Each structure stands twice: as structure tokens, then as C-alpha cells.
Length: 227
Image 1 (tube, rainbow, N blue to C red):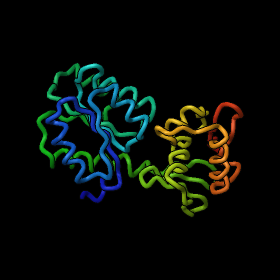
Image 2: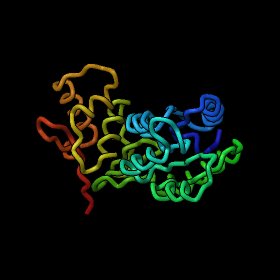
Image 3: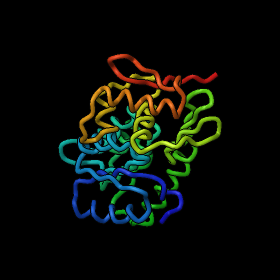
Image 4: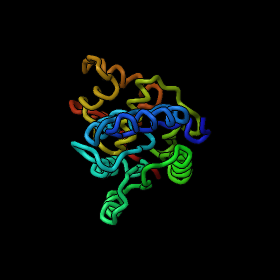
């Protein structure tokens, strides 16, 4: 397993089932987790749900293509690397790829070793240099390790607590509504507003009461406060 990629998650968006299986097998041997999607619409939904560290996508697919999906992903998370694979090398396609913010554009067919080398280089150049977010005074978040740090000490969080904190940090400074919190933290589960309040109180006990701001009746947010 690749030492740089082994702690990362990746979203693979590919409509051809044979190509997807081959790439999935290669990626599974090198990444912590591989998510897959059939087209750009499904890929965008998976990106919002799982927040992968990297995205690999075919350029042209039915329903919604990889380049349009890339534009939407970059609007959500401009620092997430997106690698586009395509059999097309026309100037117009390349220019559109640049315009939507693609990090690497690779021409098919591509050997597994070449793909992995590209992913490793992208991870080195982009992810490792931007994996620490300064959230607030004394607080930082390691996006790769998915760890919240306070005054240099890692805070122990459960899976749901981490999903909640990760969501708020991903949307730093922006209100996250109750419905979105439910869909991300309690996937497929039924949860009451009272249970959410109890859950958030428990998280606050761990991270500090002033870290998470409550907007009554709407949701929660973390304000960036750095002096």
C-alpha cells in the first residue's frame, strides 16, 4: 500500500463498469477507502456525503459529465484535488478542464503505475501542504487524519462526533441546518431535535462550550476566530 495515499479516501466516478472495476481494484490496494459513482450527478451526491480527500472522474458521462461535476465540487471545496481521465485531447476540452479547476488531466488509456504516481504527486503537492485548517484560537483540524486539535492535543471524538465537527469545519463560518446535520451524522437513522441538543452538549463538553455556536431553531456553526 502506498504510504502517502493509505490514509486518504478517494471518490471514483466512471460510467464504464469494466474500467471502474479495474480502477477500483487498483485504488483499493492503495487508499484507505474508495467510493464509486456512475455519473456526475451521483458523484456530486457522494462527494457531499463522504467528503473524500481526492476525486478521480471520467470527463464525459451520461446524465452529467465529470467536468460539470468538477465545477460544482470546486465551488464546495476548492482545495479538493480532482483528476480527470479522458480519451479526448482536443483543445476545447482541455480549456474547459482548466476553466473548471481540474488539477490533472490524463489521457486514456493510462497504466496503473502512472495513475498512482500522479495521485501521489498531487497528494504531496496539494493535500499535505493544506491539510491543517486553523479553525479558531488554539484549535486546528487535520483534514487527512480527521483529528481536531486543541492547544496541540488531539481531542478524542466518536465517529458521529467527528462527522458533526467535520461538517461544521467544512462549512466554517456558515450556518449548517438541522436537516443537513441529521443526513450527515445520522445517515438513515431517525433522530429527534432533543437528541441532537443532547448530542451537541456532549460534544461541547469535549471541545469547549464556546467553540460551537447554536442558532436556535435552525442549526449550528463554527466561527473562524483567529487573532
